[in-house]
Image 1 (cartoon, rainbow, N blue to C red):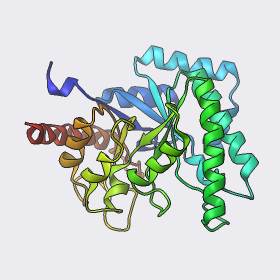
Image 2 (cartoon, rainbow, N blue to C red; image 1 turned 90 degrees about the vertical axis):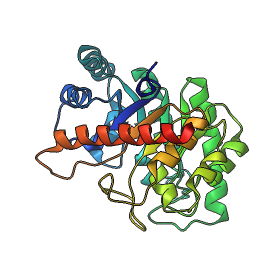
Image 3 (cartoon, rainbow, N blue to C red; image 1 turned 180 degrees about the vertical axis):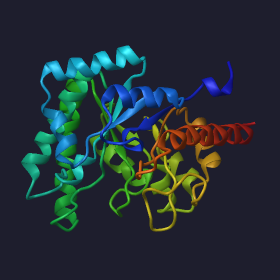
Amino acid sequence: MEFRDTYRIGLYEKAMPSELTWEERLESAKDAGYDYIEMSVDETDMRMSRLDWDDGQIFELLEAQKKVGLPIETICFSAQRKYPLGSKIWEEEAKELLRKGVIFAKKLGIRIIQTQGYDCYYEETSDETTRERFYRNLEEGTIFAGSHGVMLAMETMENDFMNTVEKAMYSVNRVNSPYLQVYPDIGNISNATDDVAGDLLTGKGHIAAAHLKETVPGKFREIPYGTGQVDFPAAIARLYELGIRRYVSECWYCGEENWKEIIKGNRRFLDEQFRKAQELLV
């Protein structure tokens, strides 16, 4: 088996224009060489409304995936920024949001929800109370997700609360369930520590997948691949050593007319990083 065939890379939905139909998104990702799509359920009304789809709408999306021959396999659940699990103001809304996300994923056959490591975000300040509320509600949500066979996997964020795998592992160890794991973003980790490979090692046995994202110091989004600080080969080599074989290209559409060529180029860039990582593994 060729090394290229031993890993899979999905494409983040937001790498494509939001006005596309799902069939167009799936076709574009397939044409660019990706293996699946990671859906975004973010804070916008348009994407949050997906959680209220009826069975007919769910069926249409399942049929689009079948027709195109490309699946949606994961969800980036950034709507939790609006309703964080540690919020006192939005606690009930946050718990209901996660339950709806789990049911939505189950209906679509999606196995992994990338949950967000925010105990609070907008109106509140992180403290011991918000953190304890977060852990309590995360455990409750994990039990619910487990009852439906859906895995929650904590993203490493851009905040001090959960910007490394080591910090995310505190939640994993505290909840202690096979349905709660870690889904690191190596770009975010690169802004939190100089030892990305060492941090990834702290998640040994508990990493479900990884975001491959470029960053520069202090900036976390919309950085083109190859223009930032992330040492992709070293991070990929460590992830590969840890048995990780599924990844997502996290990049953004920013109005470019040649966005199709950009996502194709991003896939080529990442395959080259895997080739370099392979050399490090020898």
